[in-house]
Image (cartoon, rainbow, N blue to C red):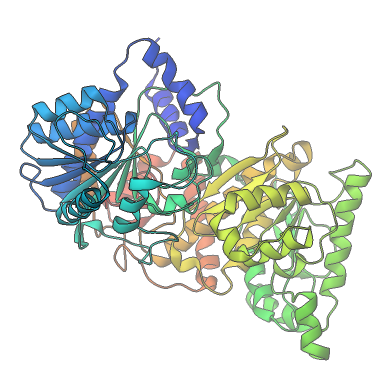
Length: 635
């Protein structure tokens, strides 16, 4: 039976928010290949269509454009060859730089028939239509000439490697990537990057940029950053995971019609509809207690503001009440802005601990002025969490968010109902306290590895902060669950933003206290949902359109013109709903807390089927709707 429009939409939403390992992708492809489905030709047609759009959007005429294809010997190279043959057949000036010793024969034949030119860089290459370099000196000259061709091109199509590559690039691909891209690290460029206005060629990556680790999402060596990545059939982890996801540019997912229902994604991302399903709607018989109470042990004699910011976020996070436990001067500050706050211990459905509380070392360095009882209360609450595990009674105490000054007070072992929220430096300190030897830079280079390791060592749910935030926790199986969210602007890297995030998570947990008691694996979803809301609030506050990560645009190879029309329409909407251009404007942490109720309202409206209303808002120039599907410009 033909699927309904709602079923097709749901299938595509799942496709856009779930990533699968290289082995899983092969298992999805195989039935199609066994049935003789020409996946390579479908991929090539999609690539050629996207290349045309990229050139057109950059103000270049596709016919006559100078295109260089960097082609490896595998199937990705074949995709690129067939696509380049299509482009050459429509008048583009195409040169293929063979980076290995062979090329896909069918794709090569098509390219040569269309008038493309092939050059080989490996002295041991045996490729029809071109001569291999006679020795090292000629090979070096050919490499220099190939680099000059690339630098003068309008478009580079990067098809050097596929999903089978493990580790860093080697040999000729590594040399090309080091010269054309980056030897290591991330590009130092603004968060809103406009390829159409850049010096040098556009870069279109086939499936994934060459040089990224497919399953781990790392950058193990030289790589070529892409302006657009066209990925085939399903998302790969590197397209969602930091730091690799930062160098993929705009992601286009070609829908082959894979059936992923039998597979568990290795990574999934939080988005608006899933977040909406986790928010507790107010009910006619509610009281302040049934909506949830958040307890906060935050702020300190040294850092008053963190107590206020975490409290503002919690109070705005869809709960009925907050309790603050801390120094009198911080409590008085909170009461000035939030007079509904209750001071002192009492019933709570979640705890937020440690934001603005100094570490042991910082407290000792501060002397008498830095002393208060926050750390003692935090330690007591955390130790009760550990005791619950010992008594096999994991639902006895409320779930906990442990941030900043709580991270050096952790018991040896916690359960999934405790969320740890370190940044990279704090993560390194946490890991080192459990016997690892790692620094903050290493955590940033391999965030998935170290977030998983922290989850294994502590038993807690881990939120590792970043432009793309990772959440790792219990899945009820022998493997951790991994979620990402990058739906916030780079402006969120500001003092106090983490305090607002902690309060937001605390509110999300408090309103879901009952479901958490029944199923602790919900902690990953709830934590990711809170981070999503925090990012959305940051976007609303900044008024721009740049985010740490964006869901892919879906390309239906049966309807390429529909995709071209979508891109054209999206670019025509530039200026709608932005107060400070695509980049947005600087924000303070307090503005993020202020925008949180609006973010929650927008998300919950989606749950009530108000998408049509938001579509109308977009036509009226309201920025709110632009933060959901296809929310940013093509590039």
